[in-house]
Length: 291
Image 1: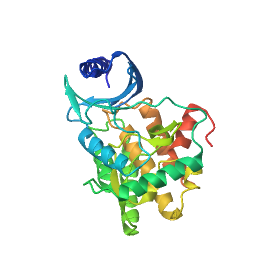
Image 2: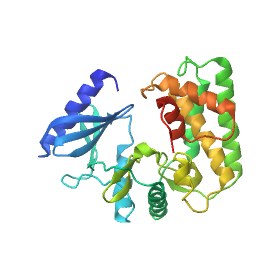
Image 3: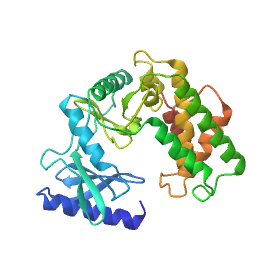
């Protein structure tokens, strides 16, 4: 969010919490991109805030309630207030249970088991959701429109658009079984807690092959997930790299170091196999080793 929007969003979240008898004298920004994640204190509530109309918060709330009921490893909504979407001063606010992070983080085998359990829970939930191909379409629309992605060179635009189209055809052509997925179960959406790994952020849920979810997680996690189609996983990894590249070139994207990330992803896609995971690419940019 823009700085002025962040200030307004924090004010909306803290005033809302106070009106619900949750003392919120301060807010710590945990994540700031196109939506805001806050820790409200001293009530210790995790708040997600987005401009009204730019979120799918009701879907997230409905799905979270159903998944918690079937025992999926998910961070639940805040139990001290009604489980719903709150609107205040032009923002949609949802309130969730806050978990103090534990170190070291969860082992890859534990994350893989939690993701397997999440997928099992999602198979037990019947809730209309978009397909993973809808996300490909969103990325293609950004790449195809010079107004939305003015900084993309013509050669890069043609390359990225072609790669997205080719991967869509290849993955759909496999006819793999599809189910409800998290959509982006990368390390940033997994909490390490004393109760084990818990997933957060369900706004990107979609239907597709489980390999689409696995394409977002570290290689060490994939190694412990059973029954993976490696060829499909490789195609999904390419797809994720291409989609994220497109989103980083969106003129309205607010992801930190977005353009740098977009340039690196284009370089990786042109370099070819073996296809790195997203955490590997982020690690390179941060100058740290990724295991």
